[in-house]
Amino acid sequence: MTHTQIEIPTDDGVCPAHAYRPRTPGPWPAVLVFMDGVGIRPTLVEHCERLAEAGYFTLLPDLFYRSGPYEPQDPAKLFADPAVRGAWLARHRATTTSAAVMRDTRVFLEHIAAEPGVRPGPVGAVGYCMGGRMAVTAAGHYPDRFAAVAAYHPGNLADAEPDSPHLLAAKITAEVYVAAASDDPTFPEEQKQRLIAAFEAAGVKYTLETYPARHGWVFPDIPVYDAAGNARHWATLLELFARTLPR
Image 1 (cartoon, rainbow, N blue to C red):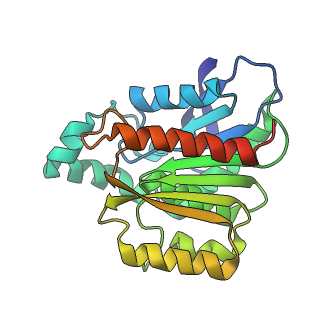
Image 2 (cartoon, rainbow, N blue to C red; image 1 turned 135 degrees about the horizontal axis):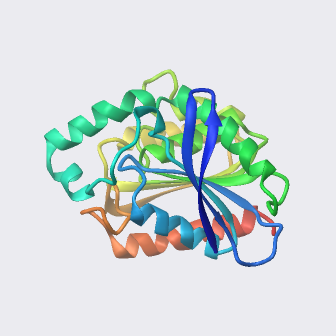
Image 3 (cartoon, helix red, strand yellow; image 1 turned 60 degrees about the horizontal axis):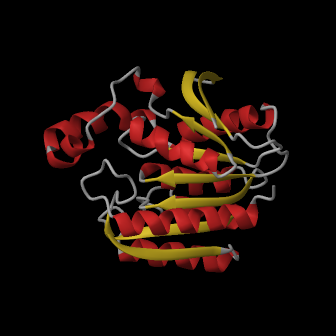
């Protein structure tokens, strides 16, 4: 696996990103990773390395680039200290609207398509936390570009906002896997039912599961990390991509 740090010009500036190339000969299927709200940090980098080791060209863009450079955060402080968390959200939330990230996504997809060794055709996406919302939104905005998307402990997939992902259900052609947390105020039961109703009405091929865990359980550096949930996350994610992204 080869890991390089690159810069991708976007409509709004220059987005730092991490690119991971498998050691096996190409052409490789590609995966776009939408980060969580903690931002780029060693745990997330290692996470993407594992995807590349499984045989996928993996692109991890820094969605917070509009806010300027930042140091890797301590997730324990973000989860435990409301003041620290509030300041972090105040800095980055306004710069990562769905409209802004979808503008970026078009450029990310163009970059992936131009990468030597990447198999032509639709790609996969996976997102965590806020990234889960972005992954499902991307499937609706660029239906011909995604074969499968997965969202783990996502927030606000079917809220009352005009850019809620569930409103794009009729445009989605990718297979969708949603892994909700049982303890997650950002994705309560009423939103799950609204999302299911939208997917059913649109004929989306989907799976929605609720893990017995708290929001953020996937990453080991998060205080609510759940080892069993993380293991199931990897099993479901790799099975989804193996089925939908031909080598």
